[in-house]
Length: 87
Image 1 (spheres, rainbow, N blue to C red):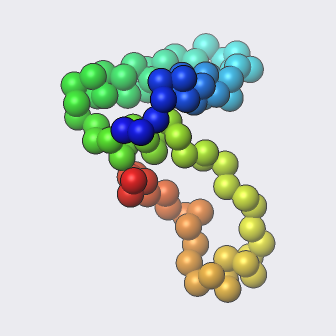
Image 2 (tube, rainbow, N blue to C red):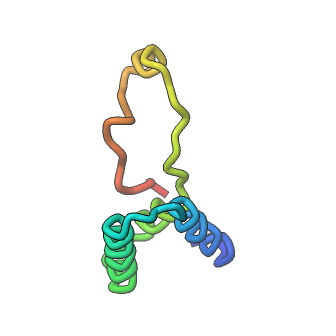
């Protein structure tokens, strides 16, 4: 995989810190359900290496671009996000 365990732990910790101010019990229940599902799928080897690396290591926050910047690029990547990272 080429990633140290410390880096993976740090990435997981950042994911939890992103939602540290979620106080709505329904929202917390949904997040826990999704995390348990992701964990179970990973343990069952249903996820490929690209899926795990994409979830853990890719920063989901993208730089905000103006309409013209998107137009000049000729594509709108904000509308869809790839499932795999292509690593």
